[in-house]
Image (cartoon, rainbow, N blue to C red; front, top):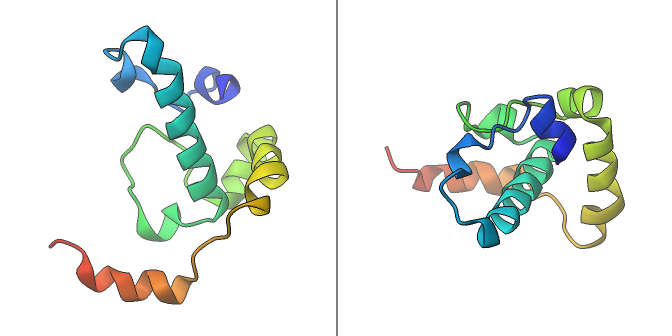
Length: 97
């Protein structure tokens, strides 16, 4: 996470107002979200395109933050799998317009 922050891939300025005793938990939680979402290569298709996370694709993640992708690979697949694209496409009909 620290590398992503230092390289400006993860902009944490919006979390400045969170109390210190909660801040690390929130930062780690959001970092994990972005790492998983990007590793599943969902952001390129489903967005959001404006966010605190600068990496848009799986290929970018592998190239720009290889240690993040390695962390994902050694932890997440043991407990989670990406949702099927077909299901995600079906859920799009429920998006607010």
